[in-house]
Length: 157
Image (cartoon, rainbow, N blue to C red):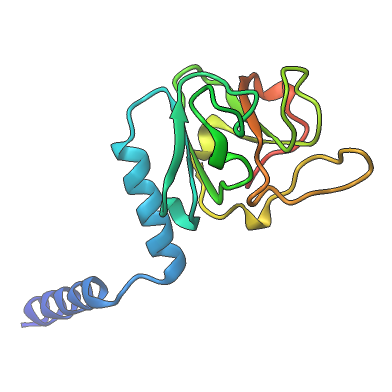
């Protein structure tokens, strides 16, 4: 009788866990997790909304030194619009995002490690100091490239 009671109690608790809704943070992570699992390997993807929602601004296996010009995987309206980013690269490199454009890769940067998979809300991330100013990453990415982690001075968390 005790085994039956204990088994029923355990099943009831398991059922309760299945009916309790996920918190907002868990739901957000679940959406970015779903996006990550459904994204083709090798890509970096930027979204216009938090938690990998909103418009897909661009996606690429390559780099783009100017998200605001008319060429490359990120174009015109993509500059300074990213609110979440996803990393499904296969090289083992980090993605280094910049707040400036150009192939001199100047300005502040912040990197997303391969192991981090995504940054679901860029509002709590910052670029390295550029010109004596610290800028937030949210709605401020203008270019990106793939680099070894040792190249990065700051990482998104």
